[in-house]
Every structure is written in structure tokens, then in C-alpha cells.
Length: 359
Image (cartoon, rainbow, N blue to C red):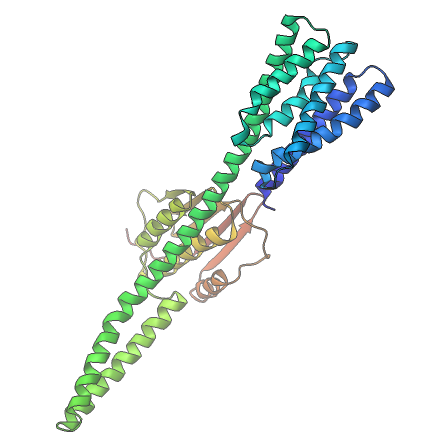
């Protein structure tokens, strides 16, 4: 169960428990309280099943059970008006049953309001008092229904956010596939053409065929090296491009990104820019896979240090692993460092390399 669904569940329990407590404490005697408790608890259980349909996706109770619960709640209102005990709390059990009715049954709300009006009149209330009970019932029903509706909207928004994250990950995979195609498509096409030509020349011009096959071997070695660099993430990258790609991917996932660059940014050597670009790429991937982040901050300081901060990280190990572990080793070998710090609400990655900045 997701954290949002747990919150909906706890809200539902708190609401129904409050109705039971308010209703029971309005009864005058101990015996009356016991009798009211025996009625209001089943009513609230039925109401809970109705409210759980949109909030938690559970099946609704049988229609006969809902009708009996509504009549029992009206009976409580009739009892309160007959004995003169209690106040507005006696309409809550009926209101919560009406609020939980599924949307196709909204036409039953007027019938429920009429039930409250009739119970109030039968209990000896004058017309104004009965209309007051009807109005309070309608207001309580609308308030409870609004809470259920907001829970359902929050659930849909949460699903939409997860869909956006999945879309962002898919887009990143497509970008990787496009890079692989761009790198290897030309090489493989040339290899195929030269191999076909060498095959045709094998009988008539063996020397030229051998020369072509040598070129094919060189192209194959180059393609293999390019593939290894791409798969390992070692291919030269532009820091500006990776930061722009990170902002685009994070934005597609519904994550607000903030990019901070110094007024006079240092000119980074290609090796430093390459490693920093890989750090940005890896951190972006980790945010999508290992957090429920709402914001990210990418900062390049004037002395050439890179900092990547996101909120809401998942619980994880005490040290970097996967791609970050490999990048830490590479930065350490280059005389720099990669550090991370996890707090209650943030995860910070800081990469630093010695830079002879040319301004």
C-alpha cells in the first residue's frame, strides 16, 4: 500500500471514530450510550466500506446493507429528537452513509435528506427544527463527500506523477538508443558495404580485397570501442548539454529543477567537463529511480565544484553504489573526490576536481 493510500485509510478511520465518539457521548445515560454504540458502530462500518470504494478501490457493500444503515442512522436521529438528547452529532451517521454513496447513486441524496427531515418531524421537532436538521445533514454530507473527493483526486495525481516518471525513464532509454544508433549506424553500414565489395573482388583482385578487409577490421575495432564507451558512460559529454538534458527529464517527471552557475564560470578542461557531465547524468537517473523528489538543485561553483541536491530520497545504503561508485573511483583516480550526504529530507552529491581555470 502506498503512503498516499495509507493516509487515506488513516483519515477514513479517524473520521468514523470521531463520529462514533461524538454520537455516543451525546446520549444521556449509560444504557442509552450502550444502545447508541451498538447501532452507530455497524452504521459507520457500512459507511466506511462505502467511503473506501473511491479512496481505496475496494468493492462496495450490498445495496440492502446500505439501505439498512441509512434507516438505522435515521433511527438514531429520531431517538435523539424524541428524548431531547444530543445536538448536531446525531446527523453525522446518516451524513457519512450518504457521502459514501457512489456517484451514480447521487440521486439518493435527496431521499436521504428527506429521511432526516421525516425523522426529525417524527421526533417532535417543529418545522423550523426539522428544516435545520435537514440543512445540517446536507452540509455534513457535502463536507464529508468533499474530503472523499479530494482523496480520490490526490490518488489520481499520484498515479499521474508515477506515469510521468515512467515516461521520463522511457525517454532517457530512447535517447540512449538514439545515441547508440548514431554511433554505430554509420560504422555498421560501411562495414557491410566494404565486406560485400571485398567478397566480389576476392577472385579478381585479391590484393584490393585484402586491403578492404583490413579496413573492415579497423572499423570493427573502432565500433567496439565506441560501444564500450557508450555502455560504460565514458563517452565524452558536454556539461551544458547534460545539465539541459537533466532539466528536461526532471521537468517531464514533474520535478522542479534549479540550475545555478557562477557569474564568471570557469573554463573546464575536457576531462573535467566529461566527468561532471557523467555525474549529472547519473544523479538524474538516481533521482528518477531512487526518490520521490519534488525539486532538484544543480550548482556549479566558481572553483569548479559540482553539487547536485534532491529532496525525498529513498532509504538506502550508507555509501554510493552502482554508477556513482564507479564515478567516485574515477574522480579519485583523477585527484578529485565524490562525496554524498543524506539527511532526513535531502540527498546531496558533491563532485570536485582540481581545475586550472582559464577565465
